[in-house]
Length: 117
Length: 117
Image (cartoon, rainbow over all chains, first blue to last red; front, side, top):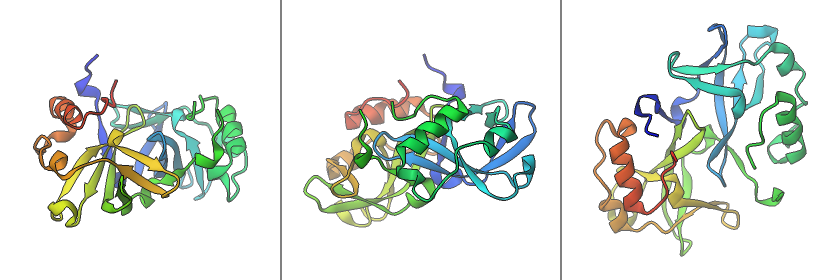
């Protein structure tokens, strides 16, 4: 099961600014920071900036980690995220970090498994 | 299985400097940064500074994430780490991030499950 060539540890302090590419290889945004579930040690969200890509302006959006995959060929993250998925996501409010209902709706919206199960 | 009161998302940019306590509640060090496995989205290591605690000076040591647990009562991380465990750990060399053999020996030394299985 060893896949040493595909392994990739990154420092949490180096994650900021990591590029995220669409399936076509075009960069659609960057990771601003990650949200980590301290209990399980799992990354829950990549809070992404789109910097004008997708017409989304400079705002930041929390995208479930399961929506990204690391691509060793690109040495970066790849996603099939679309603009309408991001703009249509459940509104984030100030308490989103502790709102399991918002988390559930958000994961269902993006069609990815809950990170907490 | 809902445990909303125990949930805790933290920003990767806020992890630096998080306190780590021993089982007796005394702070033994701080998290300098985390090492994240980009493929799985799992935290692999907390790179800790001991700042003179345990007589270890200011050096940083990668401690397997499984050695820490988040304690909601402390609102911080707790560990049963001892000085001899840290000083006796396999030497870290420049390529430790990609050295599965070093990772295996380190996890065995600390008696925690491999994060990659």
